[in-house]
Amino acid sequence: MEILSHEAWKVPRIHLWEISREIYHARKEENKSWIERLRTSEVPELRDIGAFFSELSLRSLTERLEDIIDGISGANNLSLPDEYDEDG
Image 1 (cartoon, helix red, strand yellow):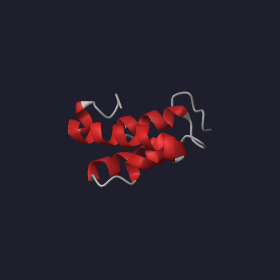
Image 2 (cartoon, one colour):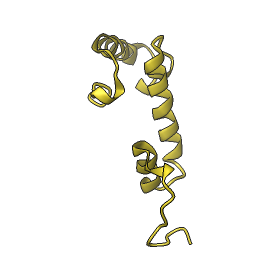
Image 3 (spheres, helix red, strand yellow):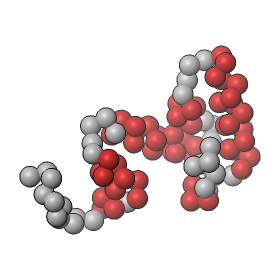
Image 4 (cartoon, helix red, strand yellow):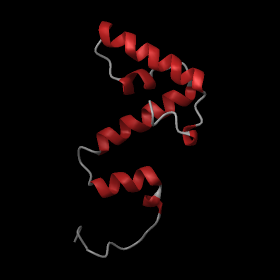
């Protein structure tokens, strides 16, 4: 939850507290991950964040770490040449 508490996400603290409590109690009852809990939240901001993390986790299976970091930081919008020409 430390990541979600960063001001860049603009998630109210009460929503973070509620989702944290829900995830804690759900661990004992179900096998849903915290990302799935975010994606099914009633709070639109949390649903969007859950979808973002879900997409990142899927991309991490097939893409390079550098590309994932570029996606997170927004640098992938830049068309800079790869000076090491790793992609040939």
